[in-house]
Length: 317
Image (cartoon, rainbow, N blue to C red; front, side):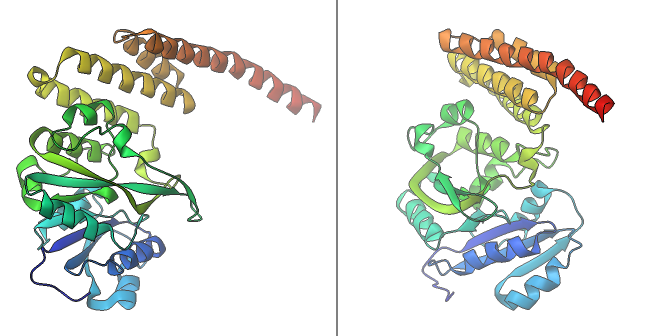
């Protein structure tokens, strides 16, 4: 990439931990960007698989590699921000891949919309083989560009690899919360959306890996999501109407109930379904509650039967 001094400088922060083969593809996708003014910051969060030597051998001085003691993805991203030189910051997870025009499209958006603090984009979903399985349509939940805190609250999800944000916005809203194991991206999205305008490019500009062994697949993620949303609403309760609060709480509690049932944590599934009951605001919500209890009932009935069959089969063998 040949630097163009008339264009804003973009710092790309790539956190990684023991993923040298995956991060290679991620870094290469940044090098392939059509936008010229980019620095690539790889924050190696305590890898012991030879990531550092591997990247230096493959890319040399095309990247800046920083090794730090393992502290989690938020710690790695924050470290990357702290050593960055750009006025614009982009994040790329080590298992995701950007399409070549990703940064060019987003820089152009922020140049044309100087009062916006951050811009997102859609993505292609891919499996572990790299095959496309679908694509996102964020406009379904982020109805408009601008101050979108209500939309973010109702559908609190953010893929870090979709982000291009002004560094000044991060300095104003705060960096990633290092005390959160998951949902740190949602927490940041909410804080930024409360104070700054956010835009969306309705075009898939990167490939997002689904079904990998990341933290987002942990059961504890449901508790972190709830913690983040509850904390945000408490801190900003005077600015959020009651109807939105009811809708948000019903959604996060009912979703947690379904997720916990899927993980076999039935006591927690029942607990969150009971909490969701207090925020029902229509027949559709009522049907969700009934469906959850029906699923819990099926699980409770099936468990003893599975144990009996297992014993019977063991006895026959």
